[in-house]
Length: 332
Image (tube, rainbow, N blue to C red):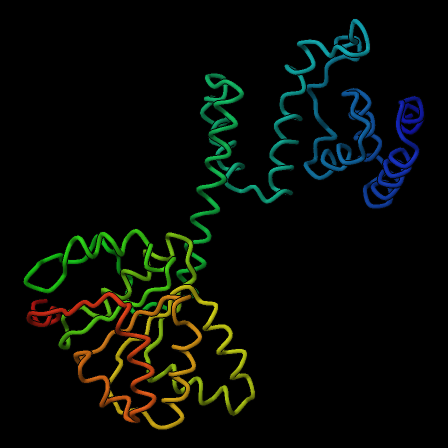
């Protein structure tokens, strides 16, 4: 009966073929009685799509007991469904919307839609207001998921935020400088940030806070202890993936290098470090945290030519923060 009605509809032959093919595949998978009831329900609701039949079977709606009599919603003419259609078909329409939102992976819109249905607030909103609310919910959901994904990929040492920083002049943290860095302009411009200070003054925490804030702005961030980074470059040379690793680092919006200067660099380490800084110079941002003042970095690098090249790229166009005071760990 359903197929016969399909051929009576003004449809394109290819569309008609796809619908019939879909119904045949559903018939093979579903029990005969359930499929027959689902087809009857589709005829009753004047929806001849095989997807509609499939949703009925998927949601076990073929035994729906609240079906109106067919005569109740016969239209005055072919283009009018009537008030009863939307009243009696509301559960099916709601099911279709929820299913399609899931299929399209619009999870934020789906949750907002369910909340509107449960609280019955959708009756109080105009179409434009409701659409704006659903779109905003989807945008917020995607933004939150992106932040969580970037945060996991960064491997931060601390779960820190800019709001947690102790912005005290006595500690060397200038409020205006931190506010400027919070805008993220230094990342867009590829400018470096050099953080120095004694053990426990909050260098790693500050670097992590800036990194977390960058993730919230949509930037890709990676956090490394410098010694572990250079060890990773050594292993990458052994397994032949060093160029891929350098390429990956060069594409990272913000690279945080912690504990610079704990040991003097060997020749290959100097070359690898030079390669990383050169790839990122003036295009991507690097934050370097060290116990040593910048004036002592020349001796840590070791070789004069490479030290000159590295410091020339890192120092002259960078923001410099020198933290002071007692160890924050001691205060705890």
